[in-house]
Length: 228
Image: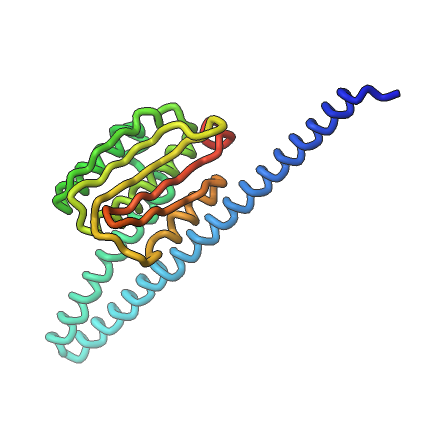
């Protein structure tokens, strides 16, 4: 006769194996989604912009040949402006793939530098308490840093006097990011989709609490991705 505890252990092992397979499949799906997102950004952004610049330079060449110098200078100025914008878009894309500041400085110094820059540019006080994030896995740190960057930009747009950023422990050895501001409340969901999409890549969840005294964005990553 089979020992019931043995059957129970076997059932638990099968469940753990199914959970590992499910987590692996979710991770693969998230990576595929991210590759598609980056490819779409490149095609609709930099590639289209460079194609437009090439057409403008052709127009400059024709204008010079026909001695329409004023028109050539005007079109060339537009091409230069678009070229600079394209460089910035590629820098932003590179930053989203691999934040250089995070790699070179570590999580807490990089977040403090980002917070100081936003504070000066937007005239807002930004408090940072993220020391516990230094113990997180690299991919969790990268995700949190990118989420902070997006959330800070959204929070600053609400014209707050103060923004706070904290990272602490969540249930089951997970990690929680909280970004709170006291700016004017807004009912729109603008910008939240990007947070949800980025968090989903690591099976994270995003919640938003809007009230009369500000907005709180909370992101929770499960323990199996936050610590490993």
